[in-house]
Image 1 (cartoon, rainbow, N blue to C red):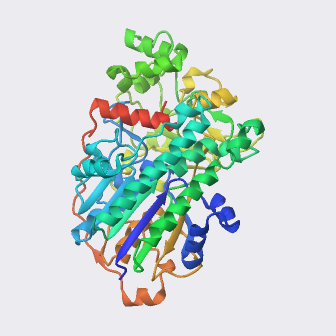
Image 2 (image 1 turned 45 degrees about the horizontal axis):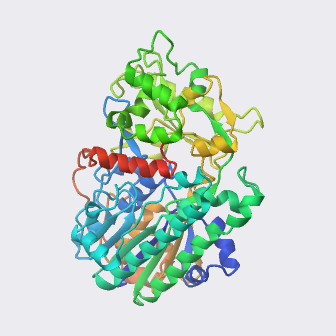
Length: 559
């Protein structure tokens, strides 16, 4: 069996960019890995965002079993949302399973790993962790050791703060600094700590594509030739820097190490239109905005409404530091604009999901479970399948699906009731609530300023990520088909000689492994844990939650 497995995650990487660059000789180390190994697209989860996709990577399970469907989840009997964290996720991480079989593991910067679990090795949390300190590390002493040896662990980048001010140079410098610091940490750990399995995620590949795609793509609505000329190579330069790091790291690994390069999702250009789902629901008679009779404003609600509408950005940031305001802004803003006594369905507005205002789940729920619920979902789905943009006659959504069409398992009931899939992301779901616009407005062509202000990124996620396998028992020059992100956990367990739990949904990607190795090493399976743990209470203090929200706002995932 291979002695070790080394995973390098390139968040948001896509073969749409990598393949042409490889063919042009611009990424020599990735080119060699493709020539000497197996590769193909890696299908992400739905939705294809970091918390969901990385949770399926970690557990080998679909979201209906691990229970994470976005950055937040609704509290019971509430319209408030809480941030997800590692305790929200159900199911063992595959590196915990490796540890149970005596394997030493090292995990660096994987999203949704805060608070860090106790592993047989070391772990540094990634996205959804608060500011860098000893609490993001296991063991905690690792933080002090790295600070002593390296002087810095990592820094957070808030792209939106730079982009809104057109400070592309400073943002790019930050990105390159983060890469250097991430590499320094990995280089130190692989040479000074025992490990059998190692995983590091470079998130900067995601960040640079989100906000520099406009400069690379002359057809992008934000492309400005006079400005973009200077920055059009920035995405390539980030990938080239990481390509060099990949070559250096592989040179330090043993011959029996299997290397896996993967991404949680792909990336592609955004359009310059917004679609307002709540307004569509209102037009269909399924959602009612509050009028003067239904609105019972108190002082706090008035402050939220006025602040969102009139305050300059810098003062909005100060208001977010007020704890009650920070925690309640989103739900209050929606609350005071919707008449829950008549509303039957609503959208989160900044993502393609629809919730039924269900009795027993939401405090103002009016839709009865059972046939009324099912008939309402069927009606909405049929109407949305026929929903077209009047400007071009094109259907807005490629797929409109019930949650059980996508997910399976004990936690499907926690998922949104209807999931929308555009495919090409022509239409943005802007973070500003649709109630801030005219209640009859279904579409809006966004100006460049509105795209910046509403965190409409240059490019956004696509379902097809990348996968490259390279090692002594991997087929050479072979193209893999039908691989999914949840397939990586069982593949890694198999390659390391560890039984695969029977409740894992993914499959071993055996078509990329040499036949003789498969015949000599039959699959082993283990019985799953008997029970699913209850949802963990919030692991964030108020201050930590604000730090995470600040990071997500900086990335354009929250308003």
